[in-house]
View 1 (cartoon, rainbow, N blue to C red):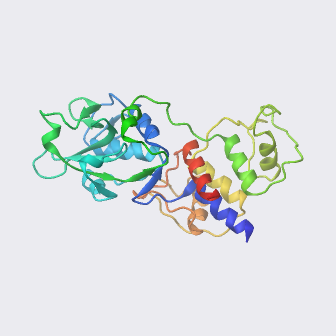
View 2 (view 1 turned 60 degrees about the horizontal axis):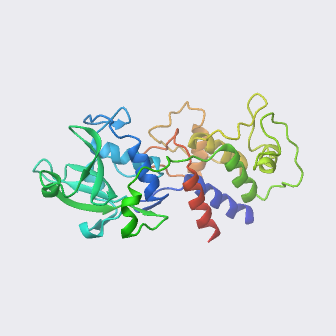
View 3 (view 1 turned 45 degrees about the horizontal axis):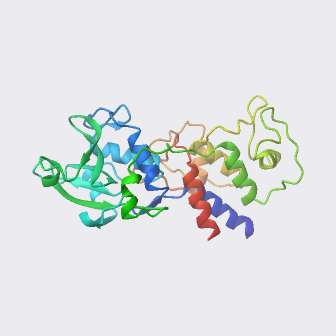
Length: 302
């Protein structure tokens, strides 16, 4: 029973389905991610850092923070909770009627009556909701699609909109530590065979434990403790760590039949450990952030 509970908790840690109203790392992390793409050009239908349209930009930024929202502006306005203009908080989606035919543009509120968005004329930029020449008269509403882990008060919303450290992702060493602790692996006896891990590494004992349990393997004699893992790689790790069996065809749109991780993902899907994103993708190349990692650890401990 203890091992089963551990399976459920650790699996949720990395592959939890994100509902319409989700929890996020922090508003500062979200803004930092959004500001990385300042100046990215606009293109209708654009959904990548090469070029964005407005809803492609918001979807991409939220996805980097581990939150799945729909693709189009209309769909995005249909999720979450309505918010009045006076109640706006950093991270809320703000919507506009720029076409005269209803909602046609959106962005992310960053505090101090400003929002970041992919504009047709200048690409990703910051604008004011109170702009008397354009945005003020076209504003039609806002939706809250995420609860953040840190509460931003009225007086420090401006500070939250300032440039901050970019998002940090969990490393192999950090994930090894989580798995070693959650699985109650023996970390008293250390047998280290990796060339790039010694006692100075804070995850020295955990790395030895997961290697001894055949959960992680190295590459050419190295463990690469500072390297990040993708969700595809994590699927393999979890299946091996918890000796999962059984399979079902998940049919994620970004997971082809012949991909090396397909069977691992299908096993997770069979056990209802992962359901993927709302847009039907699994997120093969998505990385696990330290903030997301810590958030789920807090939930497990509570």
